[in-house]
Image (cartoon, rainbow, N blue to C red; front, side):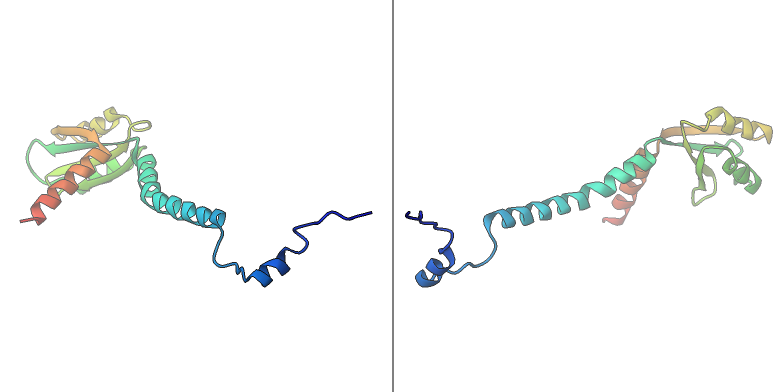
Length: 148
């Protein structure tokens, strides 16, 4: 009985005699490494933007100004911050405008205006805009101011 020749059995000896040396990574391993690097690079770019979008997608900004043109009283700002669904209340640098960032799903716009009328304040709504759009507008204004 004659045994069939098994090329795998003597492969290492053949490669040693012929001087074949294995160097580096194989094609599959190199392809996997390149794919991982590309995916990691793309995720570094896209994941923060996606997280930012999901955290601010339901926020709106309402910009108010007192009809009297005076500064905003601190007790009004504190009262507005206590309303459910209000994310933040900020004044501009001149203390004449009040920017109320609120979650449009939970905070009713009528609750804000009721808080103003409860304190007998004449308030004008200057603008009501999406929070991301307002933030982008402010960033663009800052860029144009900084560049000569």
